[in-house]
View 1 (cartoon, rainbow, N blue to C red):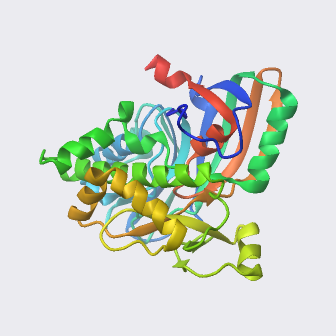
View 2 (spheres, rainbow, N blue to C red):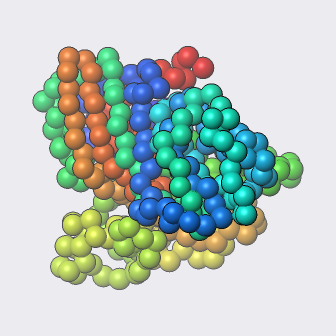
Length: 346
């Protein structure tokens, strides 16, 4: 886990706890919430699986091999962590034929939970959110302070930072992006990963500046806003009582720039922060522009829905729901200092 450094601000205040995460695979459980059911008919086999110790891309490769189809004929909505127990869906395009017997599907760490037919390939991003159940061990910290911080997380949300998955092993994707922008060749798949990492680190820096100002969850002059549960944006516009109420109720959120071609939509103070971050790392900002990415927006905060917790001795279990594209590590960072046992065992 990419832990906050001394320079990284904490939005809800100083750390209130220390703990170990991912001591065991089932300490980190992720369940996809697609928001729809398979149709029951069509050219695609729709598999709901549970996987342990395996990344999504590798599982897709194994499913393609089992079904005798090219890898691009396998669909999935999102990438899931290897060091976790995850429940997610895959589609396999099998027009005019049946799948091989399920008894012949032997992928280490993978169990099939349900099988259906579906009319369409499952596209990336076709996801309402994820349900997390996290078990934190060796918890140290004042019980009342931890309880109070969890209540803050439930009522205020957390900064919508990109998690360590975006930045690769040992955070190597951003240096690789710099090398690519300087002329080093990269495969199509790697290029996409490096561009995403470069964009994500700039967004996180914009978010850090807003956290320092304590404006990550409230508007400043020139802000652009996003409707909750969508990518629809509007503004900039003055904040009246109606808009302030919608922000307080998590109906809309202030946003930060996902850097690319064109001018950011923000103005005034919000624009000054975004331009300042881009100017401070022109190598990444200009590289994204040359790569042809367009300016986009991302919410600066995320609501942590249905948050519940239970503590027993030095073990704390959390459960919550996050919308697609948000990271459980943002919730953990709001609590304190986490030692990732899976990285120590790797």
